[in-house]
Amino acid sequence: MPHSLDRLEQRLQRSLQRYQAGSEAQPGLCLPSFTKLAQQNELLAVRFAGSKQTEPPRQQQLQALGRLAAPASELFSRDWWLISWALNDDRDGLGAVLDDETLYRRVHAYFSARIAEADLGRRMWFGLSSSYLSYAATPPEENPRWCQLAALVLKGFDLLAAQSRHPRDWMQVVNRHRDLFGPQAGQQLAQAMCQGQGQELEQLQKHLLIPPQSWLWSRIIEARLAWVCEQSDEVFPQHLPSMLTLAKNPVHTDLILKELLSRYARSRQRDQPEPSLQSLSLAQWGSPQLESKRRRWGINVDEDVCRMVMRWFAQQDLEHFFSLLQKGRGVDQARLNYWRRFVGQMAYTRVVLGTQAMDNYSTDFVEFREKNKGRFASLAGGVAEDNAFMMQIGDYYFVEFSRTGNACYYYSSKELPFEPSARELHLSRELKRTGSSKFNHMSDWQHKTDRLLAQLGIYPDDYSGSRETRFTPAVEDKRGWPEQRQQPVITQPDTRLREQQAIELLQQHGVKVTVVDHRYQGGALWLEVAQETSQLTPRMQALGFHYKFSRGYWMQ
Image (cartoon, rainbow, N blue to C red; front, side):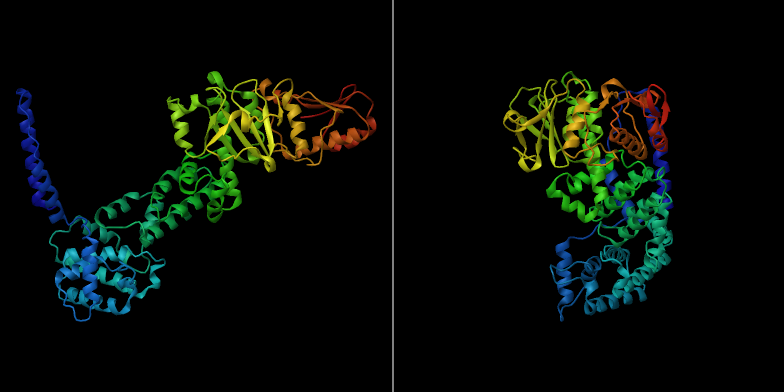
């Protein structure tokens, strides 16, 4: 703002302060709203500060372009002003002026002459800069006419700056970013963004029109993505909010999501759902658990990334079902902990809401339905408190129910009595079909279910033993189960393998084994034996087990 306007503003502020001091003595005195004065202030700011110009109507631009293409048409100053804004318009399929050598030669000659005569004008310069920045093809340097336009815009800027007695705000900002019109266009701004100087871009956007499809956005986003993805696992998540803000540009949403998800999949935090990434990817590409959306995911990310996000959905669905949707709102920790062991293999999960959950408008239920739009189904039949949860593991679908006392039903994916993606599913006719396979949750059900799942070829995520191994009655397992402890035992794959090999070795020699696992209490894993096995001790020691007389073998 010019110095004279600054002085005027200061005088007005002093007057207002005196008025406010007087109004305190007269409470009934009100200062009127100077609406028209505020409007005039905005107009003056545009006129004297030279802020961002408004693009003229497209129809007028098209008419001017039509006259440009007509051989005998005479063009006036207003026509050239309209044309300056429209060099990238495809003219309803006829192609852009920047892609037409003949038309652009005429345009370049006219504006070069105006600059040579020191008669360009600010309005025309803003039009030319807008056409330059709105070019979408990348890399733009491959178009020689775009390079010529860059030089033209820079010459025009230097002319306007030289003619200005008082540097305008926009001139100072553009002058800081002269590289935008050179061979390394956009690199300086991209580097500033990487260093956390986002205000530079904000200042530039305040004065220049940078449309979403601009080559400049591509430069900034690609450089910023490369820098962010090079950061450590600890630093990388800190930059997600700013990158997801850039992802609001629809032209680059897919690229940003692809790179961020791929980098997150390589981090140590990959098993921890990242809500912002998950939410945006769901909105942009749909659920990766749906076959109809899997192709869209496959185009953008590899299979490992897809599995990571599927695991996020499965994990959250489990948490919601066994906590939010339980009768009495208690957490069914036993079932939750049991199925957590298979979450990495769940290719599909879906919560089926009964009428009570569908009509519940408490904050947590509303939030659940909002975040999972299109991912849950409604439950028909049964009572209002009923809810169901389906999960696909391997070649089988398992269906759990929220009310206690219900068995878990399971079906081969080749003989499903229902469509998993249906918007409504019936309790008794589809999910709890008479005669279907099922198991209950009573009396050591976890161990029994492990044996059942092993017969179906399904093992916990961290299982590393032979997939052909079957549980046999010769092994009596007395391990603690989720409802008996706060946290499940987590063992390394090598330990699990040696444990399984030790059990198989003893069984091969006809030894009855009882497994007693106290590791969750800080103790040891015991393989208790009731007969002499000293001849096997060296081989058991090679697997990491120690022998104690009259009890058996143990390892930490």
